[in-house]
Length: 307
Image 1 (spheres, rainbow, N blue to C red):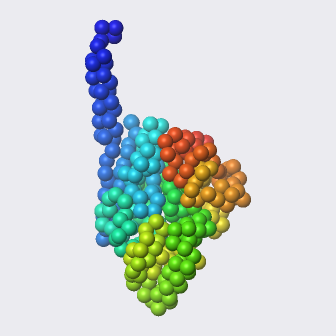
Image 2 (image 1 turned 180 degrees about the vertical axis):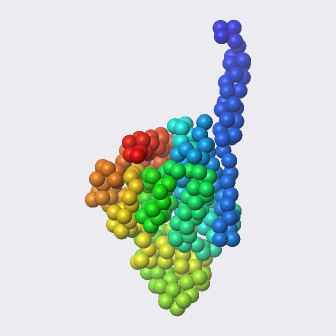
Image 3 (image 1 turned 90 degrees about the vertical axis):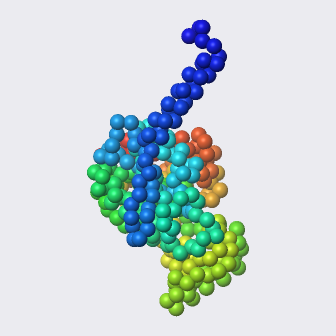
């Protein structure tokens, strides 16, 4: 209005922002469930006029992450703006009711197989709520764990798979060697193999490096789950051909952690069952508008492959 003062306009704008924030807060609900003696938690965002019988995107974070980290919160917000509900889970990593980033100083006793089991537990929870269409969406390490889950479990409710910045087998060893050196890798791998052979896989190895966590305590089971020759979580060759739901891989051109994903996947991409979207200028964590592009690519893919 022409007679409004600047202060009045600012006040009204502030009310609008607060109203929008309150609306978003009301839609966010923390969900917990018990699983193998642990409390698991997740953040549920319901789109306007939607309930759990509609499509739900099940989001799995990457290594040491959680559902309140920037990329996960932004993904949920963008999905919400596009009418998609989502459930972003916290993998326990062996910690009861875990929140925030996994502290590298804590003992690493979990295995990647445990993450797959927890994804299964949340799929089951959604099934119990009446959800009949689930889009499984994983980032980084969570993308690889989602890939293994989708290949090993043929849930009729899981209709689509979106893998955001998955890594390759080469990325795993290369990342370790770049951080800690080839000698450390060989030494820790040999020690883990010896402990497993002796039936002592749960035993903690002190001053051991793993992923982005230096000089911490790591069980042989955990180390081998990430770095052992039999580790299956970044082996596209064994898993992508077995996945029966439409799958989209989204990667960035400047992914500093997984630079070879697009090349590794080229042989599998057929434009139908498996598609690839490369986001120009995007790094591993898809900052700012890069994430919007990634989510838009995912939504276009979901809508185009809906049956």
